[in-house]
Amino acid sequence: MPETKSIAALGEAELVQALALLPHWQHDRARAALYRRVVMPDFPAAMAFMVQVGFAAERMDHHPEWSNVYNRVDIWLTTHDAGGISTRDVALAGIIDALI
Image 1 (tube, helix red, strand yellow):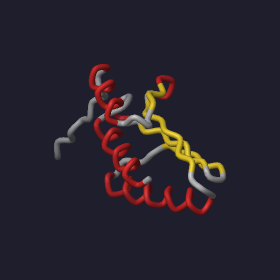
Image 2: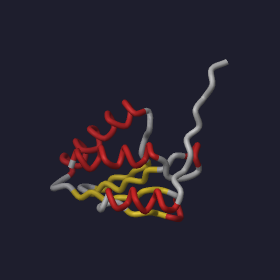
Image 3: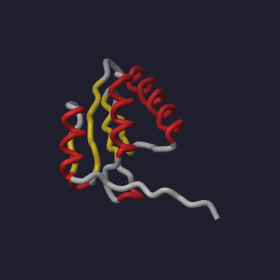
Image 4: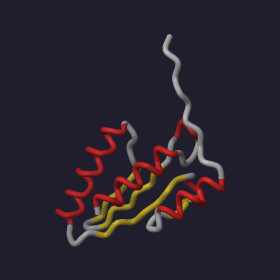
């Protein structure tokens, strides 16, 4: 049987370092997640952005929790298997930032 590699949640110091590199993201303690709100010019731009993020997330096999209302996209990134924020969330946040 193949061995699975577990992913650990970031410690407090690692999270502080990650957030310093991701100035548009916040720590949502209640959801144990990274959080960002993205506001686009209009609904089509918000949908196009979500499609781009969706393709990137699928390539990583790591999918966001999100919601969309007109031009606003709220994004939460957490690694459920780790019980909190992991390096996978930090990496996806960086990719999302690059798409904006």
